[in-house]
Image 1: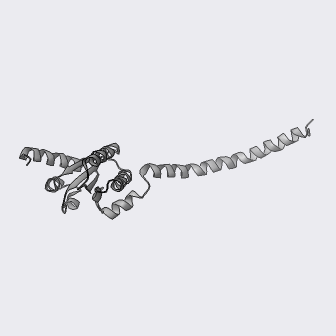
Image 2: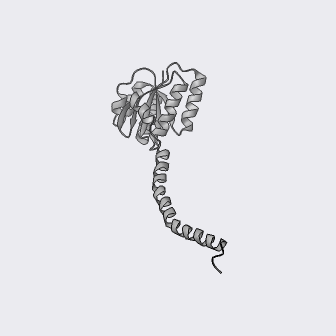
Image 3: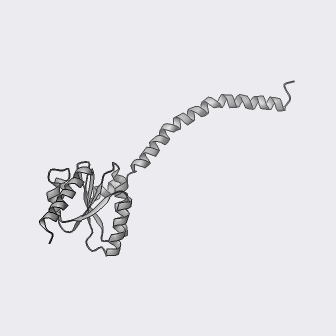
Length: 175
């Protein structure tokens, strides 16, 4: 049993994490072997997120007055929370869904992204979307395509003229 001071520190840390991170995902990890849990935690850290196993009661206390309060009010069973401060939830969710396939005992329960609640099905659907980086590269490609096409069209008459002159010089029409 944890001392009251340690529990208060945990609640303070969680409240701060809820405030600083716009993305919170509650996961199920019950039954995961220790070796898999260590690997799972390493992969989550590599994605830039924080992973924490928390008692539901402390999570509910810490979530009071935050964007995660409503979503975490009905937690039951063993829970772990993943906190992500970046503004690209798709990258994190792709990683979490891949890990839920790799580790059978690990699974998504619910999430809070920008104050909106997501159930497991919506989290999985969101993970199938293009990430922020993929979307940005597509937009840049689309913006660059007309400029490239325009440049080719502007250069085409000059290239045609050069070919005609080159053919005329080769046929010795200019003397």
